[in-house]
Every structure is written in structure tokens, then in C-alpha cells.
Image 1 (tube, rainbow, N blue to C red):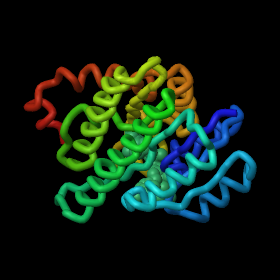
Image 2 (image 1 turned 90 degrees about the vertical axis):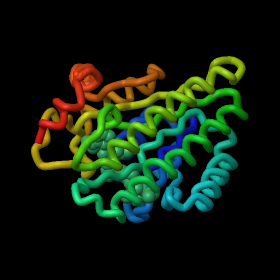
Image 3 (image 1 turned 90 degrees about the horizontal axis):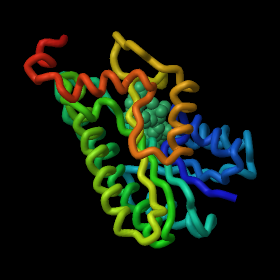
Image 4 (image 1 turned 180 degrees about the vertical axis):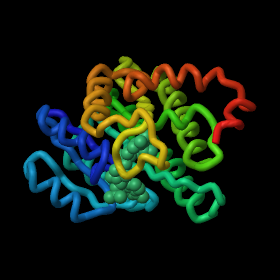
Length: 240
Ligand SMILES: NC(=O)c1ccc[n+]([C@@H]2O[C@H](COP(=O)([O-])OP(=O)(O)OC[C@H]3O[C@@H](n4cnc5c(N)ncnc54)[C@H](OP(=O)(O)O)[C@@H]3O)[C@@H](O)[C@H]2O)c1
């Protein structure tokens, strides 16, 4: 029996991935702030899911829940980090910038470190995090979101390098970079190339099973990524 933790499983990509894991026989600890949704999910498969109500910004209670999950599972094979937020914030409202940094940078780093240190101790494990295509460049409408995703991508790459220090080469890091996926997180009005939640989650799950290092979702976003990496800033500045 394999064990997994999904941070941010109450809705969207995390919820869908948790259900795929349960179908494949995993025991899954699911987390989020919305208790009623966690309870609703648990009712679907009471033996497979365990629920932990937590706000990832609360470092102490996240660490406590993490310890509880480990004690109950004994070993953890897979940790999926999908807990994230983002706002359109052209006015640079500080509350929104701060919330984004607290969740996507501080809390994400905390979860990455908890996962990595556990896997180091165990000698095996797989950390998956959902960053974004947004990681590749700046953006005038959502500066902190785009910057936070760049931070995640670089941190995950660092952990990938660090994993080589662990004997046996059995610690894997997967960085998932979606374009637009049809969840409440899809920012903006003029959204193009939006993937359905099901299609995107299936592609993500396949990449997880193959322990891919990085993956763009859906596949067509590989092309956009390629363009984004080479296009000069002055040209992006012209875009509305
Ligand atoms: N949808 C897209 O177009 C898109 C594109 C690129 C990347 N992504 C990334 O994909 C990830 C998942 O987002 P989604 O699209 O699936 O949207 P979503 O449905 O809003 O899911 C976000 C999840 O994060 C959890 N979360 C947020 N803040 C939290 C907090 N402080 N403490 C605990 N849990 C928290 C939410 O749970 P609670 O609210 O219950 O706490 C929810 O389960 C995010 O990191 C997002 O940046 C999404």
C-alpha cells in the first residue's frame, strides 16, 4: 500500500489528483482550509482518505499535521503540493501581494523542506509541486504571483540538485508548469488555451507516474514556454 499527502486538495487540481491516487490504491492525506469540502471528499472513500484541516500559512500547525500524518502512515511515498493562490493586482494592493507571498513562497518553502527532509530520512520519496507557466516571465497584472512561481521553480530545481546528495537516487522532484486550467485559479478574462480540469489532471498524473523532472500542461504550452524564454522584454511590454 502506498501513501500520499496532497497539500491543497479541497478543489481544483489537487482534488482531482487525490481521487486518481485513491483509484490506484493509495492512502491519501488531504489538506486544505475548507473543512466541509474535506469531509465531502472523505465520504467518497472513507478508508482511503484522511483529512487534515490546515492553513499552510500557519507554519506550526502545518508542521504538527505533517508529523501526525507521518506517524499514522509510517512512510510517505508521494507529496503533492498544490496549495496556491493568485490575484490580478494591477494596483499593487499590499494585502494581495502579501497573501500571495505568504502562501506561494513562505508556506511553499516550508512544505518543500518538510517533504525533502522526510524523504532524505526515509531514503526515498517523490515531491511534486504545481508551479506555473507564469514562472517564466514577469507580468504587469499579477507581479507577485508570477514572481512567486519563478521562486518555486528555482527552489524545486535546487531540491533536484540536492537530491543527488541522497544515497540510492530514490528521491524525485517533479515541477508541473500548467498554462490555464479551468479552476477558480485561472486568472483574467481573456483566457486562451484553457484545459479542462480533467484533461490537465490526467496529463499531470501521467507525468507524476513517470517521475518527470518538469512538465508543461497541456502539452501545447511547451511551445509557448519556448517562445517566452527567448522573447525580449521590450516586446512583452507592448502586450496589453
Ligand atoms: N488553474 C490554473 O490556470 C493554474 C495555472 C497554473 C498553475 N496553477 C497552480 O495550480 C495550483 C492549484 O490551483 P487550482 O487551479 O487547482 O486552484 P484551486 O481550486 O483554487 O486550488 C487551490 C488549492 O490550494 C488550497 N489553498 C490555498 N491557500 C491555502 C492555504 N492558505 N492553506 C491551505 N490550503 C490552501 C485550496 O484549499 P482551501 O481554499 O480549502 O484552503 C485549494 O485546495 C496553484 O498553486 C496554482 O497556482 C493553476
